[in-house]
Image 1 (cartoon, rainbow, N blue to C red):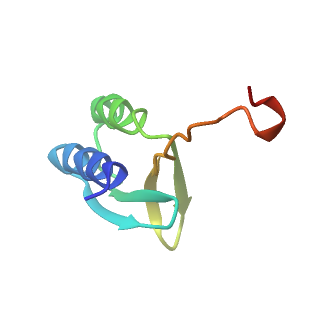
Image 2 (cartoon, helix red, strand yellow; image 1 turned 180 degrees about the vertical axis):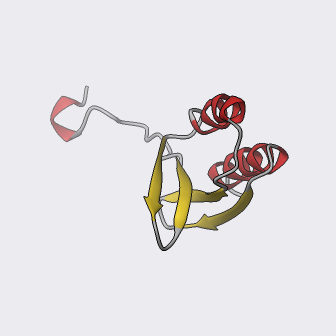
Length: 92
């Protein structure tokens, strides 16, 4: 399992422990986590939820009258380092 997927699974597990229903999906350059946020989520729980998603590379909240509230987070794939990160014009 790629590191980003494992990290995303960990975040999803923590959100699930807070009572949210989560989905994890792998993409080419990142792994996403989505969680349905119930209207009845207590105000005190929001701080815990935000503490979890703050560990992702980016996150947000989509809210609509049709879909409800969907919290999303994304964990980027780690780009492997190369031997020469300075580029061809800066070689010794």
